[in-house]
Amino acid sequence: MLVEVKKRSISFVKKIGLLMYTREEKRAYRIQFWEGFKEYSKNKGRKMTSWVLKGTQINEAQLKFDLNNKGAFVMLQIDSKSAVKRHSVFDRFLKFKPVVQEICGEEIVWDKNYFIEGFKEVSVIYFQMKRASVYNKENWEEYYQFLFEKMNLLEEAYLEIKEVVQNG
Image (cartoon, rainbow, N blue to C red; front, side, top):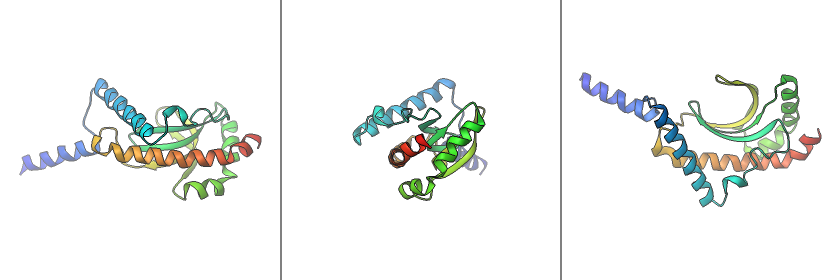
């Protein structure tokens, strides 16, 4: 009985990606995941260099992909050393929330004071897929699809309002 419980516990831990990996193994998983996403995007007709990402033309804003212990994220991150400046830029985007939600849907999250664990506070507009883990290789295709589809939406919304936010 105890052996069966241990087997189920190990299976659950593997499933949610909590097994301990060496630094090299973690790095290898991340590299393999992002190389796979690069290939997925290419097969869908988008080279990684074709995404707007850092080329937003708004110094404090960048579009980002992330996969961490909180899940998979597609986000517009607003970052500045000055909280006042960061909030000002976020508020300019917030004025166009209805436009962004029309394109992205209601599931998009707006957070003026989002803390990146162990790092800093930023403002973000994001999609999140909870319980995603780079260690769940069997779900990578699902994560790729999420990242690709949500970035297409967020990028479209950004391009729709970019000029008025820049001039705001």
